[in-house]
Image: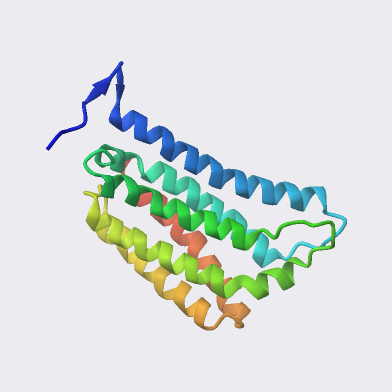
Length: 194
């Protein structure tokens, strides 16, 4: 069986694969910026729904934390196609979240409350998948830091996101979950390795 060369013209395979991952992160981040840009451009045509807006911010901050947290895993991406592909899966989740959170503007007024309430079940299903992936990832990769604490936070978020998907009409539950998620994200950042 043939192996990939370690280096081609001073460019390692990890660097080569990381470029693609970076592009995917950029595309997903651009979806968030585009969504916020449309909100700002059309601010006279709609009223912001606070729960929706804060979820967009939390989701973007989680994306950024994901970028920061992926650093130790980059060393694995050239071990096999599986590791490389698997490193992209969380980004697909964030892309789906951004598509769900931000409606496409077609010149008409947007009711963000109605949009959010019509799409929140799907949003929480995608978040459930994301949290399940992050738990699985801690076993696929050799994670660093306090993995037990990280996974306890992830499991709690998985349970709450599934509950929000199931009880999607209970907006108070979503506010509670959002508050817990924001606190959990801060806690999660503190248990990441330095």
